[in-house]
Length: 236
Ligand code: QAP
Ligand code: CO
Image 1 (tube, rainbow, N blue to C red):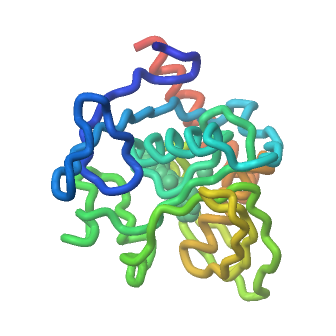
Image 2 (cartoon, rainbow, N blue to C red):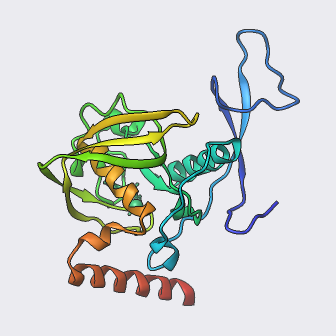
């Protein structure tokens, strides 16, 4: 079934414990055999200069199964695009929801650089040490309750600004209050890449992309290149 704004979903077999849904013809076998099929849904990611990215997203009333289904799709979409963070508005849904996984990929853990192509590797841009323990995080209605005076510079990118990276200065540490996947209130202290990434994603919920933190000249230059690239893609 093709829904508007969705790419065709693919079926990927996964072998995992908790989250995947069992299928009727692969019932749970006692103890050992845990073969499940999870339907993976990769949604289309909106790119600048799409006006929808300027939307101020609406708070989520309650974390329901629908909320969790959306978050599952967002995770599939983020992983498929090799991202570390994604806000719901980037798939066209104006709800205050963020998913994030800043842990290094298996390849990055193995050899320090997953990208065989000419894309800048994450290892070159960030200190990945200590992030091996990081896991997938879900933030519903995130609010920053404290920021440090100390500032930090990170080279940021964005799935909605593909191919462009630039330095952004933000508070080095922050505290974030949010609801988790189960709707339970949490408050965490963040620093390093986690602090940068949550501030970047919270910006999305307020209609701001990282380009808005750059000089007007840099922003215009990047937007011009992106417009030209999408024009070229159109005629090709
Ligand atoms: C936000 O961004 C972020 O241009 C998450 O070709 C990024 O996941 C916060 C991506 C860095 C802080 C630091 C971008 C993937 C992923 C691209 C992303 C691309 C492929 C961006
Ligand atoms: Co972004």
